[in-house]
Image (cartoon, rainbow over all chains, first blue to last red; front, side, top):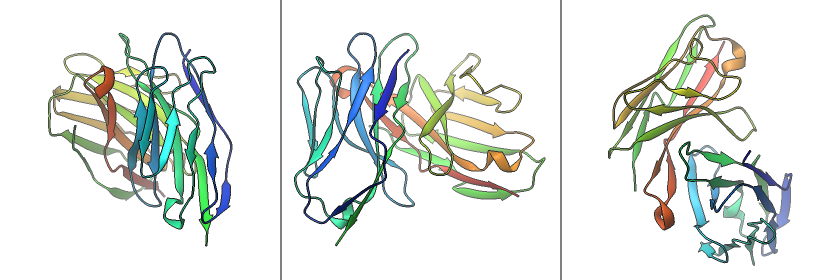
Amino acid sequence: GNSVTQMEGPVTLSEEAFLTINCTYTATGYPSLFWYVQYPGEGLQLLLKATKADDKGSNKGFEATYRKETTSFHLEKGSVQVSDSAVYFCALFRETSYDKVIFGPGTSLSVIP
Amino acid sequence: SAVISQKPSRDICQRGTSLTIQCQVDSQVTMMFWYRQQPGQSLTLIATANQGSEATYESGFVIDKFPISRPNLTFSTLTVSNMSPEDSSIYLCSVVTDGGVHTEAFFGQGTRLTVV
Protein backbone atom coordinates (compact mmCIF):
# COMPACT_ATOMS: atom_id res chain seq x y z
CA GLY A 1 0.00 0.00 0.00
CA ASN A 2 0.88 3.66 -0.08
CA SER A 3 3.14 4.96 2.68
CA VAL A 4 5.38 7.85 3.68
CA THR A 5 8.63 7.64 5.60
CA GLN A 6 10.45 10.62 7.00
CA MET A 7 13.51 11.13 9.15
CA GLU A 8 13.04 10.70 12.83
CA GLY A 9 13.32 13.68 15.08
CA PRO A 10 13.60 15.65 17.08
CA VAL A 11 15.93 17.88 15.12
CA THR A 12 17.63 20.76 16.89
CA LEU A 13 19.41 23.46 14.90
CA SER A 14 20.94 26.82 15.59
CA GLU A 15 19.42 29.85 13.96
CA GLU A 16 20.61 30.37 10.36
CA ALA A 17 21.62 26.73 9.97
CA PHE A 18 20.71 24.70 6.88
CA LEU A 19 17.77 22.37 7.24
CA THR A 20 17.05 19.10 5.46
CA ILE A 21 14.21 16.79 6.45
CA ASN A 22 14.18 13.62 4.37
CA CYS A 23 10.97 12.15 3.06
CA THR A 24 10.48 9.10 0.87
CA TYR A 25 7.26 7.55 -0.28
CA THR A 26 5.82 4.35 -1.64
CA ALA A 27 2.90 4.64 -4.00
CA THR A 28 1.63 3.40 -7.30
CA GLY A 29 1.27 5.86 -10.10
CA TYR A 30 1.83 9.56 -9.58
CA PRO A 31 0.70 10.87 -6.22
CA SER A 32 0.68 14.50 -5.19
CA LEU A 33 3.18 15.26 -2.43
CA PHE A 34 2.86 17.74 0.41
CA TRP A 35 4.63 19.17 3.38
CA TYR A 36 2.38 20.26 6.23
CA VAL A 37 3.53 22.20 9.27
CA GLN A 38 2.05 22.23 12.76
CA TYR A 39 3.19 25.07 14.98
CA PRO A 40 2.89 24.59 18.74
CA GLY A 41 -0.74 24.60 19.80
CA GLU A 42 -2.03 25.16 16.28
CA GLY A 43 -3.66 23.14 13.51
CA LEU A 44 -2.11 21.75 10.36
CA GLN A 45 -1.17 24.15 7.58
CA LEU A 46 -0.04 23.37 4.08
CA LEU A 47 3.55 24.50 3.66
CA LEU A 48 4.16 23.49 0.06
CA LYS A 49 3.21 20.90 -2.50
CA ALA A 50 4.17 19.33 -5.81
CA THR A 51 1.83 17.44 -8.07
CA LYS A 52 4.12 15.89 -10.67
CA ALA A 53 7.66 14.67 -11.12
CA ASP A 54 10.40 17.33 -11.08
CA ASP A 55 8.02 19.96 -9.71
CA LYS A 56 9.50 22.14 -6.99
CA GLY A 57 7.24 23.42 -4.27
CA SER A 58 8.36 26.47 -2.31
CA ASN A 59 7.04 28.71 0.43
CA LYS A 60 8.48 30.85 3.24
CA GLY A 61 12.02 29.94 2.17
CA PHE A 62 11.31 26.21 2.25
CA GLU A 63 11.70 24.08 -0.88
CA ALA A 64 11.09 20.49 -1.88
CA THR A 65 11.48 18.80 -5.25
CA TYR A 66 9.39 15.83 -6.38
CA ARG A 67 11.92 13.17 -7.37
CA LYS A 68 10.19 10.28 -9.06
CA GLU A 69 13.39 8.32 -9.64
CA THR A 70 14.24 8.27 -5.93
CA THR A 71 10.62 8.50 -4.70
CA SER A 72 11.64 11.40 -2.48
CA PHE A 73 10.40 14.83 -1.49
CA HIS A 74 13.02 16.21 0.89
CA LEU A 75 12.31 19.51 2.63
CA GLU A 76 15.09 22.11 2.69
CA LYS A 77 15.64 25.61 3.96
CA GLY A 78 18.86 27.51 3.66
CA SER A 79 18.65 29.48 6.90
CA VAL A 80 16.21 28.51 9.63
CA GLN A 81 14.71 30.90 12.15
CA VAL A 82 13.44 30.37 15.67
CA SER A 83 9.92 30.86 14.29
CA ASP A 84 10.37 27.74 12.14
CA SER A 85 10.20 25.56 15.26
CA ALA A 86 7.32 23.20 14.58
CA VAL A 87 6.44 19.65 13.57
CA TYR A 88 6.71 18.95 9.85
CA PHE A 89 4.69 16.24 8.15
CA CYS A 90 5.36 14.82 4.71
CA ALA A 91 2.22 13.50 3.03
CA LEU A 92 0.95 12.05 -0.20
CA PHE A 93 -2.39 11.98 -1.93
CA ARG A 94 -3.21 9.45 -4.54
CA GLU A 95 -6.30 10.33 -6.53
CA THR A 96 -8.03 7.02 -6.95
CA SER A 97 -11.42 5.61 -6.25
CA TYR A 98 -10.41 5.55 -2.60
CA ASP A 99 -8.75 8.90 -2.09
CA LYS A 100 -7.09 9.75 1.19
CA VAL A 101 -4.09 11.68 2.41
CA ILE A 102 -1.38 9.56 3.98
CA PHE A 103 0.96 11.20 6.46
CA GLY A 104 4.47 10.44 7.53
CA PRO A 105 5.26 10.23 11.24
CA GLY A 106 6.28 13.87 11.53
CA THR A 107 9.61 15.48 12.38
CA SER A 108 9.87 17.89 15.26
CA LEU A 109 12.21 20.83 14.63
CA SER A 110 13.54 23.12 17.33
CA VAL A 111 15.58 26.14 16.32
CA ILE A 112 17.62 27.75 19.06
CA PRO A 113 18.96 31.32 19.00
CA SER B 1 -9.90 26.38 -1.01
CA ALA B 2 -12.00 25.31 1.94
CA VAL B 3 -12.57 26.70 5.40
CA ILE B 4 -13.44 24.13 8.03
CA SER B 5 -15.10 24.95 11.33
CA GLN B 6 -14.78 22.26 13.92
CA LYS B 7 -16.30 22.22 17.37
CA PRO B 8 -15.86 21.88 20.20
CA SER B 9 -12.25 23.00 20.12
CA ARG B 10 -11.57 21.13 23.34
CA ASP B 11 -13.38 19.16 25.97
CA ILE B 12 -12.74 17.22 29.13
CA CYS B 13 -15.01 14.21 29.46
CA GLN B 14 -15.70 11.50 31.98
CA ARG B 15 -14.89 7.94 31.03
CA GLY B 16 -17.85 5.97 29.78
CA THR B 17 -19.51 9.00 28.20
CA SER B 18 -19.69 9.99 24.53
CA LEU B 19 -18.71 13.16 22.69
CA THR B 20 -19.90 14.28 19.28
CA ILE B 21 -17.59 16.48 17.23
CA GLN B 22 -19.01 18.62 14.45
CA CYS B 23 -17.32 19.63 11.22
CA GLN B 24 -18.73 22.30 8.91
CA VAL B 25 -17.17 23.14 5.54
CA ASP B 26 -17.83 26.35 3.62
CA SER B 27 -18.18 24.52 0.31
CA GLN B 28 -19.62 21.26 -0.93
CA VAL B 29 -17.16 18.38 -0.88
CA THR B 30 -17.56 14.76 -1.81
CA MET B 31 -15.44 13.20 0.88
CA MET B 32 -14.60 14.24 4.38
CA PHE B 33 -12.02 12.54 6.54
CA TRP B 34 -11.65 12.10 10.27
CA TYR B 35 -8.17 11.75 11.76
CA ARG B 36 -6.83 11.15 15.24
CA GLN B 37 -3.56 12.62 16.44
CA GLN B 38 -2.40 11.12 19.69
CA PRO B 39 0.07 13.13 21.78
CA GLY B 40 3.36 13.48 19.98
CA GLN B 41 2.22 11.29 17.12
CA SER B 42 1.31 11.67 13.47
CA LEU B 43 -2.17 11.68 12.04
CA THR B 44 -4.01 8.39 11.81
CA LEU B 45 -7.02 8.16 9.53
CA ILE B 46 -10.11 6.93 11.35
CA ALA B 47 -12.59 6.89 8.49
CA THR B 48 -13.73 8.45 5.26
CA ALA B 49 -17.21 9.94 5.33
CA ASN B 50 -19.14 9.96 2.07
CA GLN B 51 -22.47 11.70 1.75
CA GLY B 52 -25.31 9.27 1.32
CA SER B 53 -23.40 6.13 2.25
CA GLU B 54 -21.82 4.40 5.19
CA ALA B 55 -18.46 5.68 6.30
CA THR B 56 -15.43 3.60 5.42
CA TYR B 57 -13.32 2.74 8.46
CA GLU B 58 -9.61 2.07 8.57
CA SER B 59 -8.14 -0.97 10.21
CA GLY B 60 -8.41 -0.72 13.97
CA PHE B 61 -11.42 1.58 13.99
CA VAL B 62 -15.04 0.40 14.18
CA ILE B 63 -18.39 2.03 13.71
CA ASP B 64 -19.64 1.17 17.19
CA LYS B 65 -16.80 3.14 18.74
CA PHE B 66 -16.65 5.98 16.21
CA PRO B 67 -20.05 6.44 14.56
CA ILE B 68 -20.03 9.02 11.81
CA SER B 69 -22.83 10.96 10.19
CA ARG B 70 -22.70 12.77 6.86
CA PRO B 71 -26.15 14.25 6.24
CA ASN B 72 -25.10 16.60 3.44
CA LEU B 73 -22.12 17.76 1.40
CA THR B 74 -20.94 20.39 3.90
CA PHE B 75 -21.33 18.74 7.30
CA SER B 76 -20.20 15.69 9.23
CA THR B 77 -20.05 14.50 12.81
CA LEU B 78 -17.79 12.04 14.58
CA THR B 79 -18.86 10.54 17.89
CA VAL B 80 -16.32 9.06 20.27
CA SER B 81 -18.36 6.52 22.25
CA ASN B 82 -17.88 4.97 25.65
CA MET B 83 -14.70 6.94 26.14
CA SER B 84 -11.63 5.82 28.05
CA PRO B 85 -8.42 7.71 28.84
CA GLU B 86 -6.82 6.06 25.80
CA ASP B 87 -9.16 8.10 23.61
CA SER B 88 -7.49 11.32 24.74
CA SER B 89 -6.26 12.80 21.47
CA ILE B 90 -6.76 15.56 18.99
CA TYR B 91 -9.45 14.72 16.47
CA LEU B 92 -9.30 16.46 13.12
CA CYS B 93 -11.72 16.84 10.27
CA SER B 94 -10.29 17.15 6.77
CA VAL B 95 -11.39 17.58 3.18
CA VAL B 96 -9.51 17.22 -0.07
CA THR B 97 -10.47 19.69 -2.75
CA ASP B 98 -10.17 19.72 -6.50
CA GLY B 99 -7.64 17.52 -8.17
CA GLY B 100 -4.47 17.62 -10.22
CA VAL B 101 -2.37 20.72 -9.57
CA HIS B 102 -5.04 22.17 -7.29
CA THR B 103 -5.19 19.20 -4.97
CA GLU B 104 -4.90 20.20 -1.34
CA ALA B 105 -6.05 18.81 1.97
CA PHE B 106 -7.58 21.27 4.42
CA PHE B 107 -7.98 20.70 8.12
CA GLY B 108 -10.12 21.95 10.90
CA GLN B 109 -8.39 23.33 13.97
CA GLY B 110 -9.03 20.06 15.75
CA THR B 111 -10.82 18.98 18.89
CA ARG B 112 -8.53 18.37 21.84
CA LEU B 113 -10.19 15.66 23.90
CA THR B 114 -9.13 14.70 27.40
CA VAL B 115 -10.83 11.75 29.05
CA VAL B 116 -10.56 11.52 32.80
